[in-house]
Length: 193
Image (tube, rainbow, N blue to C red; front, side, top):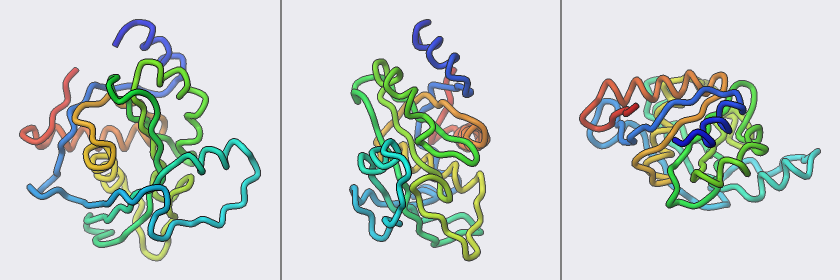
């Protein structure tokens, strides 16, 4: 990362780690969780939003969804539609942004125009936040599940093998859980300083 890029990120405030090599499967060779990219119209996302901001509406309209099926102990088999967006040139180094609590990917919108000059940027809304589904009936909102969601997102949905990670607030905890999974299974993923 060059000095100019670092200063942009440092001025933004969130924590930065990276680069990261994607590929954590946490516990089984087939992958711990699954999902399907289903384009801009997911199988059954919430679409009846009332927009009080044209900026929020534009953010939503430009996004896509994928369906995530959790296989963690508490959420086994639960499906949620996850909102995401990508920006910039795919040939640039990749940067994944993870939002905090109680926010969403929309909070990064002012930074993205600067970041996409040097990075291919990918953002998502965790389940329960932003434009992603907000399951209630017995759904466990866990860092472990979100870490596996991010792993699936970067490898299967966005198709990254290496990426930088920029986190804020709760996104930092998810990022550390993700990195912990990579370090715990070094044959399938690794963290490189």
